[in-house]
Each structure stands twice: as structure tokens, then as C-alpha cells.
Length: 313
Image (cartoon, rainbow, N blue to C red):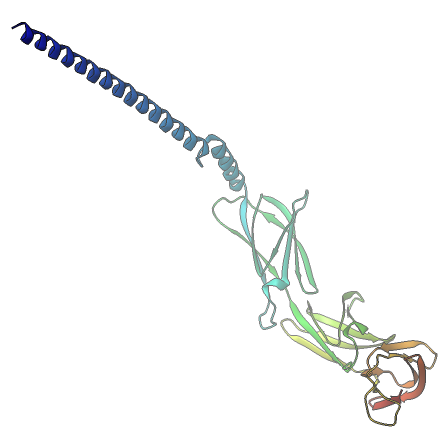
């Protein structure tokens, strides 16, 4: 009887301890869950704050975008358009625009037959350049937020093209000038032949080679090509060097060639042992140096004739 009561008391005590442990564990889990929920809530709040701070519509960006939109609203979309006859092979890269305010700075540069810009209302200086053609005019940009203001610029242009008989000369040795009817030089360039875009009109095309100058008149119509030919009284001479053993073996050693005119002035030079030179009619001499040796030979140039100068070294 007493034993059963003792066992019962023990069982009750054990059960009570177990209940207490379960209760404490439950409280611990609730506390941890509450802490986790709080932490997650703080993380979500921080993430939301970060999104707001970095969003494209945050206060700073909204201000910048508003300012940018305000600037654009104050400007007019302007399209500059040049009109010229086609068929001349003029590329968009050949057409250059320069637009600047009449008072103040801020020049804008564009390329192409059409150039679109956003400009404040006011007066501007527009400069157009196509090759050697230049045109400048003043324009007024009106206030317009929605429509595009088109400003046309006309260009009466053509091409002047000249060929020459400078076949065996360096391109840099031939200098060209194009002079308009007022006596103003509108173009300077170099090369064996000439091709330039100019304003329609009458010109004098001149070529200078080795101090000798010759010119021809040419007319360039609007949208057309004006052609001419510059032919100077020149002759060609071919220089060759062979070994001095009586054979036709080409000289392989490097040699220094210098050509002099009748006054003793150097007019051309080369380090090759087989080359051709174009010269004006007259008497000349050539001096060749190689392996410590020196040899000189005189020759004549006749207009329109080709000749040979052969040396054995």
C-alpha cells in the first residue's frame, strides 16, 4: 500500500519535470521564432530602403531627370539639310556642318547631308563645307517643343578634274592650285592628278613641278565635272647599273645616284640601280657612288622622248 503511493508520487514528480522541460523548450522556440521574425523584418525594411535609395526615381535622380527634361523643353529640334545635284559621288563624310550662336560659345559639329541638333531659340551662324566649297549664313531658330524646324541650305557645286603627264614622278613633287575668277586661291594640294569639289564657276588650274608651272582654264557647271589636262614639255630617262666586267649582270651593291641640271643644281636622287625619272628638256649629268668609286655621265632630255642611261661599275 505504501509502496504504491511512493511509486505514484515518483511518477507524478517525473511527469511534472517532463512537463516543465516541454514548457521551457516551447518558450525557447517561441522566443527564437520571435527573434527570427524580427530579424527578417529588419532585413526586409533595410532592403526596401536600399531599393528606394538606388531606384531610378529616387529624389536625386528625379531632380536630375527633371532638370534634363527642362533643358530639352527649352530647346528646339533643328534639322539642317543641304541640297545639291546628285551624281558627283559625294559621300556623307564629305559634308561638314558647324553651328554656333551669334553671341557666345558652344559650337556643334556634324557630318552628313542632313544634320539634326537641339538648339535654344536664337540666332546662329551656320557654316557648310563640302570639299573646297564653303558657305556661311545666319539663321534664326524659333521656339518649338513638338515640331522640327528644317533649315535648307543650297549648294551649287561641281568637280574640277585635271590629269597630267607626270607618270614617273613622286606625287608630292607635283603641286596644284585652283584659282577662282576673282584671283583667290580656293585649293592647294599635291599629286600626279587633281580632283576637287568646288563651287560652280570658272577657274584656272595650275600645276608646278621642279619650279616649272603651267596652267589651264576650266569651267565647272552646277552638278557637273569640269575636266582639263596639264601637259608639260618633259622627257623620261631610265637609269640602269651593271657590273663593270663587260657582262649584263645587274649591279647588286647599293649605290647613290644624284642628277644635276646644266647649272649644277641637284634635281633628283635615288639609291636604286634601276629607276626612271621625268625631267624637263635640257642637258643633265648623273653622278654615281658605290664601293668607294665614283662615276659621272652626261645626257640630254628631249620633250616627249624616252632615253636610257647605262653605267658599268
